[in-house]
Length: 263
Picture: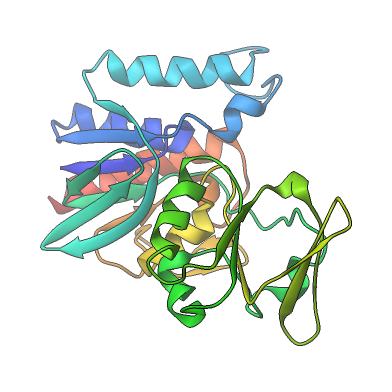
């Protein structure tokens, strides 16, 4: 089984070429592609002016017409045990090959003081860093299913955990490391560690948890679009290069043809 994570232009293109080569392929998507947020697309061949969400839906329809399974889930970790085990919010999935087509890595920050204390009490990965906060005061910031998963994991590490939303927070405070969270109601919450979980897992966090190398330009790949882990490939806005639909579609086609040639 080949699993493509992401259903934007790169993921859909890859799935189409793999299926036409009679490969067993499935697509997993959280349905939150950046394409869906685009008001209009006006520079893509053959579509004219089109709403981003409509173009996204057209892509989904094109693979469903080929009977490619489209699974609505969010992958939050990738492990390996003979084959890849993709841990989702709803289920786990086994796969021999994985293609990451998640869109660009999110480097923006949302909370005042967040950037200053990254690695100094602020983490984005419970399984990576939770151990360092054993029995300490922890805040989990975020809502949604991904934040719930991180919270449930951290409950095994500390019984002193609070849940907060971004909108509750005025500023993160500390000196050499995090010490407090200042809330909008002007009260301070003392903490030793903060785990920030957006509404959905950022591609950078998924890569960190899974051992996939990234840099400031995105996922690190070789000349064959393969990451540092054998049989995990990446394409589209997640890798270095211009962030355009035409480039993403081409990436997806190239990755598919590389996989086809190797199997």
